[in-house]
Length: 152
Image 1 (cartoon, rainbow, N blue to C red):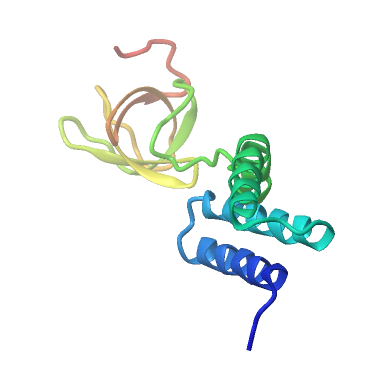
Image 2 (tube, rainbow, N blue to C red):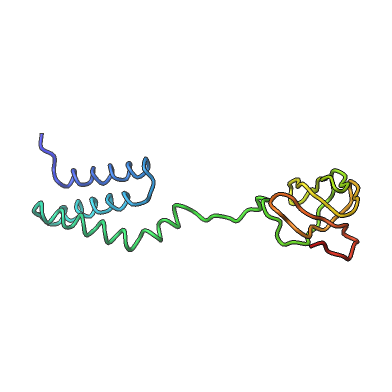
């Protein structure tokens, strides 16, 4: 059984596309486009094997250089910046004390849907609205929201 070169290149393209699904890096996809360029060229013109390989190489490289960044944006989608609550930004936002802060012990503050370890220079009871004035890793320094002084 003899398979036509057009069908061989077409199936090779499909193989490259399937391989891209297994090994995502968005490079192999363009070899599939190159293979389909050869199949399309063979549909219209009879080419030697060397010419077929040249069309494959040219089609793959041109599609890679011209389409990769555009198609990657389409297939990868857009990443939304979500608040993961790992950083308090901007500082001086407010939160609510959920566990009493009695210096030098830590308390707890609810901010941005998360609970943070909190310290203060004065005793602050649960339910008090506080301003976050400093963050060090996952520990925040707070002052009562009515207070005009900031801790540094």
